[in-house]
Amino acid sequence: MFAELLRERLAGIAELSAEQVAALQAHYLLLERWNRSLNLTSIDRLEQVVERHYCESLFAGRVFEQFPERIADIGSGAGFPGLPLAILRPDCSVTLIESHQRKAVFLKEATRKVANVRVLARRAEEVRESFDWAVSRAVSYEDLAVCLPLLSPKVALLTGVEAPGDGLGYEWQAAIALPWGTQRFLRVGDRVSRGTEPSGK
Image 1 (cartoon, rainbow, N blue to C red):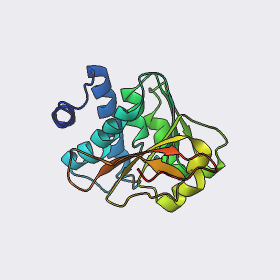
Image 2 (cartoon, helix red, strand yellow):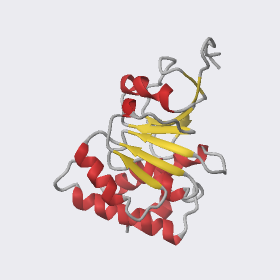
Image 3 (tube, rainbow, N blue to C red):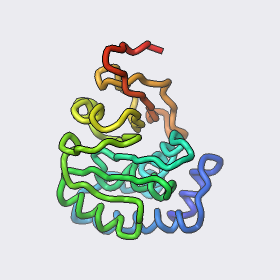
Image 4 (tube, rainbow, N blue to C red):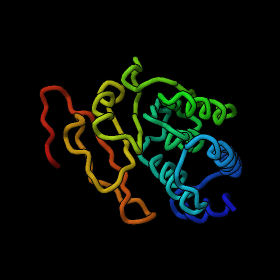
């Protein structure tokens, strides 16, 4: 049922191979099992899981150029959006950053067979690396402001209706409404160079 729903919800948006669908389904089954003892997600209806977790994450993959990128997923939690992105784009290197130790254990188990993923069990502001892109969802703008400008010149956020504003140090493109529901958006930003004010476009 997961595979059928995923393909149905992604029709005309993203084409996945049988191997990619199988990898996403394997993650879902593991998530479902671990969620009984570890609160990884409060969403439990299959349709909502497919749309909010997997489809939104895969939709975010549309912003990346068609060449290898280094991507950091900040506050990855159960692996979203970073793990589906890694499965969608095996040419990219994806780092899942998660400070909650038990969630990081889950991520390490969930990514055993995903060669282009690694897990960092630490706070994002403690990471001393740079990436081409940072992605995130369900992390407050206040927390992101501490680490985002240190990690990446480009960012893609999956958000609700509240816009990030200029406080994060990025200039934001027009928000992209997600195809599932009316309150979810993909927001893409470029880091503002020092001494340069956002144009407000």
